[in-house]
Length: 119
Image (cartoon, rainbow, N blue to C red):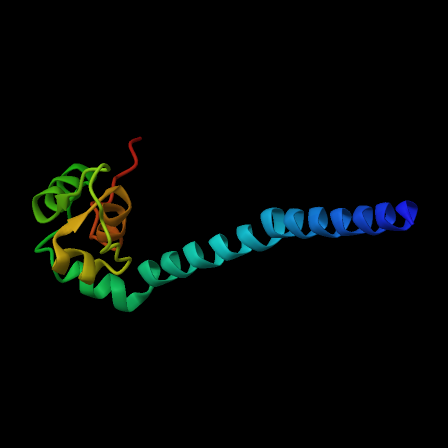
């Protein structure tokens, strides 16, 4: 009787371990990858770039874009609860709050200066 219970217990443990390994190494990475790829595709879309570029009157360098975003967003400290985590640049600027990720999304599509090659 004990042998049968031990075999059943062993089989259940193997199934549990395989399930946990699958979730951690296969399912979760795909979930996160699809989520972030969706955000990147939206930021790279012509529609989003057109909207973001309409906020600027000329081309900006990285420092000017950085300063512009910091003037528009109030950065929420990490020790405060922050539930309005938008991924759309328009929604981010409308809310006026964000952290590093929201600042990055708000900068996507901004008109950047073209650097000339020397030589």
